[in-house]
Length: 440
Image (cartoon, rainbow, N blue to C red; front, side, top):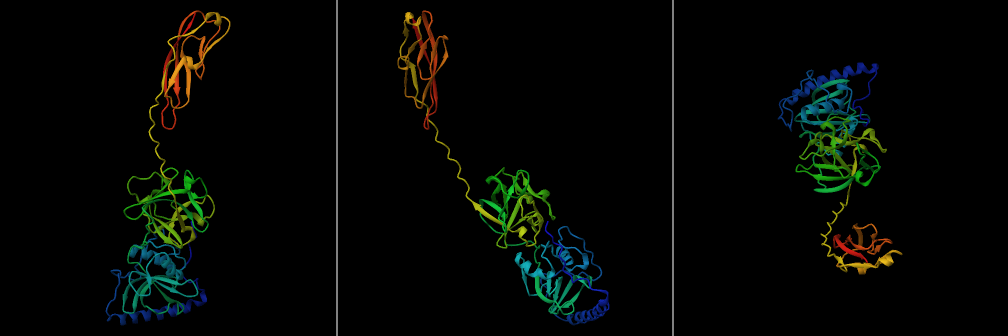
């Protein structure tokens, strides 16, 4: 996992300043009361506002899995994230310290601007950490802000939209609008079906299927290539060329650190195996459909072979910036044309092959192939092999018949298998030929 525990509140202030804080708090309370009174007679300008404010002192936020911040109510970023989740349904990425939220939200694809709206995050900046608060409603030049990290605790109330915060040192940077569910819009269409490599962009190290898990590293071509198949909702199934398994979020998890690994591809659409692709810092961000506020992430910002791939809340770091490089899909092998039957024709060249007994008594006698067999039409190399017959009569591979010394007088039948091996156009074929050998 990446380190994501930045704070959005000012550092703890020492005891010597507590008295000053108390005076300022009383003054602020008086000013809020005046502002509420002056705003009461103005026309309400609410933009996607919450139906009611939270009412000071009654807040009861429950920590949500995925909040990248700590500190509870004393941390403005923790509180703003929680309120955005509970009140606007927005599971925000981790955007660093409060003063960085506006620019990082814009880079992450969220709508931002200086026009005040309810159901938004107000961002103030200064030379320090900055400050954020959740805005529920707008009335004229007033906004109702719910915020953590205000004098070390939770606070809510009406503020002048353009008044400086934190004793005049923080200026309004703008608003992050949460009109939707906080999930990015504008996912990309890279094509209906294609093959590509995925790599951590800053080091160009591939995301691979190592046989049991999905990690960074180097491997065979099949283990580094992925087939992308676009679905009707704009997401992609991403399957391994290595074994056809899909990139899968374990258990369709929705929290930081859930493993991303290979799993048998589902026949129908499945949230754990579908990924939306967004433009991201010169590369791409891959968000799982089961947790669209999360992203494919290199665990612990790893840059070495073997680094595990997981999901983590979208945070704009290089650990979530990938390149997707299309590669040519090999053309399917052409099916060879069907071979023709081999026109082999084979038979005995004579009705009887005769040798003299007087010669066989002295030595082996040979009969050439041309005198023993008549072969025509054969396609491919022709070979001969004895199938049956007297042991003293042999047939060579090339078709020579040999009558061994000592064979007695008589007529012998020998069966021979004649084979034509075939070639690119013709199949192989065999025929059995019977020849008769007479010793007299």
